Length: 315
Image (tube, rainbow, N blue to C red; front, side, top):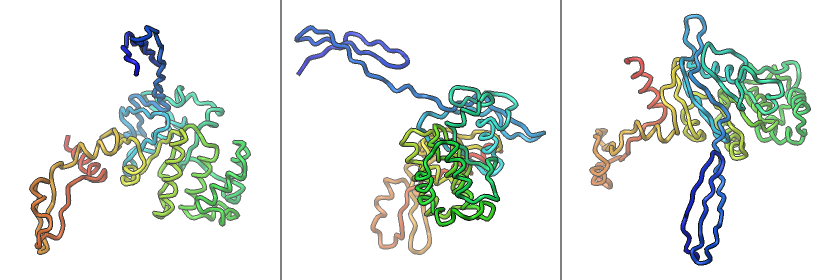
């Protein structure tokens, strides 16, 4: 076993080189260890937007790393769709900057959209055409094989309905058609506005699995949702948005931990009574003949969102 001493360490943005000396042979060895530079696929700085006197977004900032699922959470009217429309160049901000693929979003070219997938209310379809004809058009545009299209149609349970006119589809079926259109060409960045809205739990799980697979293959996903449990399950980081303001920003579990009532448990008795005690004290109630249940307290993202939304109104 070599007895190595590090004698130099130089670092730059892309890699660092440790120069070590084998104390037995006195040979100098260069070890190049490449650090994957965090590539920010989306960066937003102090973005604001108003519609008349209504504040849609006010001074929001965040960034999204390559291969990350980023959740933008909030109720209807919070500013989620407005943000997507600005990021994809469909709407101009009043102030601030938004960058996509290392260029300002209002400078995106048609060729840039070969690397972008969008699923939102602003993305239309041809109502008089069938599901298959709609998606076949985009398959040809992106040079994607029809075999891949068939796989996605089957995966999202639309294959049997592929010959229906798009205008005759239910809300959930339209959602799935637009999702297939957005992911068909395996984009570098994917914008999804409420992708599981109108879907039953089984289909929602299928969509979530597809998104996790895309993430693992390197796709960056910007996801808006009001479903806090979905965000907890699949998002790497989230922003909690309300009335155009970001209230919290970070990994879901970190936010949950920040607001959780740690070291607390609720003891529920068979007679209907309940008490709150420390977790250490809760241990002595376990197995008690009069105890119905013992639960530790951990807030959900929904609990936290409601709390901080109410707190922000009182500031």
